[in-house]
Structures are given as C-alpha cells and as structure tokens.
Image 1 (spheres, rainbow over the protein chains, first blue to last red):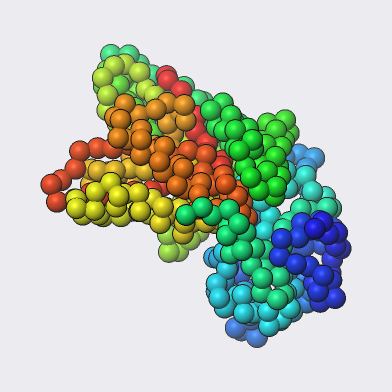
Image 2: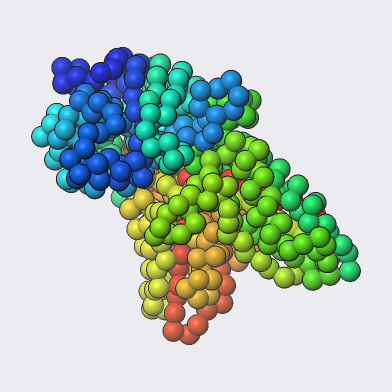
Length: 183
Length: 280
C-alpha cells in the first residue's frame, strides 16, 4: 500500500506503517553512517548532547558523492544498515523513530524497534542518482571533517522507501522471500 | 620497443574512472530489460524499472549511478615490449584515479590504514593487478568496486572430495547469506582452483567478463547456467524484497590447482557491475 508521510515521524504515524508499504517521505531527515555513529556513541559515553534532535527523527544511512555545481547533493543511495547495528539500540531508546538503509538488522536492533515502536525502511540500493533527485537541500551540521561521512540535514520530497521492519516486528526480508522461493 | 607516455596513461585512467561510474557496458544494460520481463514479483518489477531509470538519470545528469563509487580495482596487461616513459607506471595509474575521482565528482571512499581509518581524500591508492603479456600494448581495465557487495564475498577452501557439488553449495551459501545486503540483482563472480589468493583474484576478474561471452570448457558453462537457475530460485529478488531475479549472471573462471585442494572464491557484485577497458 502507498503511504505519504511528513516528518517528524511520530509514534502516531508509525502505527499505520506495515512491512511492505511503499512510503513517500517529505520533510527533514539526517544522514549518518559508520564514523558519525561512532562519534555520536562516544559523545553519549562522555555525557554530551547529540548534534541532532534525535526524538522522532529519521536517520538515513548514506554518504553522498560530491555535488556538482547547482545541485544540492551528488549520488545519494543507502548503505548497508547492519554496520550501524552496534550503535542503533541506544539511539532508538533515545527516541529515534526511523532509519533508512538497506540489508538485514541484528536481533538487538529488531528488539529495540519493537520496544520503542520504531520503523526500519529500505531505500533501493544502488539507485543513488534517482534518489538524489528527491533531495532538495543538504547541509552539513556536524563532524564536517568526516567528509562524506559527516552528519547532513536533508530536505526531501516524496523520498521513496519501503517498510522492511514495522513496529510489530514484521520483517519483509524474511516474509517476501518465502513467496518466491522454489526449493 | 614501443613507448607509452605516463601522461597518456593518466589521461585515459582519469576518463575511464568517470565513464565507469556513469555508464554501464551494453551487456549489463541489456540484462535489466531481460530481468524485468522475467520478474514475477510486482514490487521486484517496480524496483527493476527504478534501477533502469536510475541508469538514465546517471547518464543524462552526470550523477554517479551509485554513491559508492568504489575502490578502484585495475587489471593491467602490460606488453613486455612496452617502455613506459615519463615516470613510474604505478604512480601514473594512481594519478589517473586521483584526477578522475576529483574531476568526476566521485566519492572518496578509501582510508589510508585499515585500523586508523583516515580518509586519503583522493580515493587512492587503487588496487592494481599486473599481468605481463606478449606484445607492445597496455590493456587497462578499471572496475570500481562498491563495498556493500564486497563485504558479502567469501573464500572457501574445499576438499577435492567435495567436488562440483561442494562448489555449488559454497556459491549458494554466499549468495543466500548476502541476501539484501549485496544490492541484488547481483552478478556473481566465481574463481575455482589455484591457491587461496589466486581464486579470489579470478573471482574478481570474472566480474569483468562480458556477460554474453561464454566459457570454452563445457562443465564451466553448464555450472554457470545451473548456478544462475538455482540462485534465482532462492526468492531473494530485486532489493532483497522477494522475487525471481536475484542474479543477472554467474561468471566462473578456473585455474589448475594442488592435488590436496579445491579453493573457491565468490566475489559478489551488485547490479552496478562497472568496468571499462582501453588498450593503449
């Protein structure tokens, strides 16, 4: 089913999202991948604030290619989410409500998704040129020295994603395969 | 002796890096169309259509096909009657990569040390495989490799008694474990034989083979066909979201090996299987 949502991604909006839904996101999302997650985790360890407002936020696991003149961003598709698994439950417990990436998640992340009524979306891996067209604005807001791995605030319009793990713990990666497997 | 100038090498490598990241070869483009016709899942068909649109946008708007513009892997066939003039060949190849990634607005994804992890900011060094051959030409193939699929690649040191069934099981295990992480539909490169490192090299080289080119050895050709069929029955599908098109192709390369071993490497590539070859 096609759904249209605007950020922030509140618990109320998450209730209506089911694994397999095709969702168009409009609003603000943040990028962070390996190095930024490590830094955020270290900041929390030291008792410091995160550089973004994490409550009801969506983090997009993405490190773009450089923007050409006149474009807000370069190629901008998802990276493999499992590399962030180590840091994810803590962010979910702090109120992060959505993640956009690709690929499988750990049991600890799945448990944290259910515990916090959050959602994991997949964007189509390798469709970086197409996805970059749905990003209207991009601004580095933290860890500038990390280059492509810096945290960016993105304004997106009709950004296409698919619900993979919903708040009830339904997992499209596990169920969809069964419909097409021929053993 | 024929002389090839370093400046010529740099210029060509620069152009090839940019070309590889914006345009797929015609054999790769064709398989998207075939897969779209065969795919049974409606969502899978929709994803394949998006991937085709993505290729068109990349070409028209000069946006890299994928943001992971890869670590540059180079296969260089150096004719032994070539004299490289104006500097070191390795430096020239790396300089071409450096210029290509800068001028082409490609992502710099290389860290200078695997543990200290500081970005080199110019995507060098490249991984360069040299092969000394007869003749007075240099053939350079550039294959930028993304790590979503690279991370799902495997080497299996099988026993001779495991035989061809063991090889099949190894490939299916690697693909099954890769699932959605490797951005399917994938191209699966398989190296069989040689030593630990030789089979890994072969599996990467296999990814650069034109998909319409079939192996000469009949059991290898049959193995490729059987593996493709079995992989597409796993149900993983485009994006890993279910479907009948999990792989576009399986390319197998072989080499003689030791009486005591059967090394098998599986190098998985996503649907953005990039490679450009030029002869200088």
